Length: 223
Image (cartoon, helix red, strand yellow):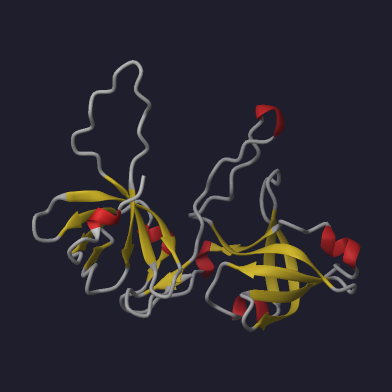
């Protein structure tokens, strides 16, 4: 998904991670985010004829509607495997797509693909318009007060909610020295509306966002 700060469009592309399996064994990491884009997750069969319900991770409906090669990946797989998308449609009001894949002809076939992820190569990443950003371009960027240059924190997530919200883990300027009996304190987080009036500067090469928050916004941080 993609965002432009004012009508907020953020292109979703999930970063790689490690998932711990049973017995402390690590499953294969999510495919390299520099090589693959996740466009959706199969969540359930649809009906009896092999159709699949997909939760989309893309703002581009053609990912699910235009026939052609997609790739399937599940934790434990070495690499995403190619599969042919035969057809698809978006279900209005449910943020859901219904798709048909080659070789998936009944409910049992569809059930076997539950929790699989639909992928495309990163080279198929759509070009964004002016003032639009991919989610993974924003995650990890540092946030500063524009006027003072003071470090506020780091973007750890982007949340769709009307206008998109930057979830920012606040920088701990002077953490108290903990006693032997004190409990570690989790960093506080803040939700910052990703609109141009509040985040006027997004400098991707410098990995820097500058904000001009309204009075009281920074006091809304939660632990």
